[in-house]
Length: 184
Image (cartoon, rainbow, N blue to C red; front, side):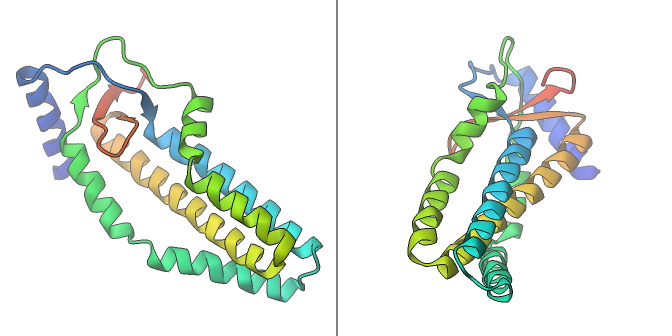
């Protein structure tokens, strides 16, 4: 709670001292994380089923899928993501007048490039060449889907603490905005 109060105080102080320029393409961070998680998990399940159809034994399919998912989740440094997110919250600015998030379909399409599209394409090629490799890649795709679900949960908690919706500009160094709940 103290972190949320500090972040809210920073947002209010910035509103009084710094002019906020026009926002570039904004996305609703939590909604985008939920949407991309659903797409990644759906593709992973489809790839897993196709690997099975291509002749991979059920036990092998499940084991290779779990291996891919586990490798990704073990190597994914969730604590780094959480700390970086907290720092960015302290930099949150009030939403500029007239700014609105991108439509959800557009935001999802942007989120799919390059990781989801690239990994899906490699998985499709692997389905032809090696169903076992496709099962591992499907597990990796599921792992990044679960990571997106984790991010959505973190964002929901932060939004609850701050009492608003977090909107972020597209891009690596995009700004973070706090919008009233009714806005997004």
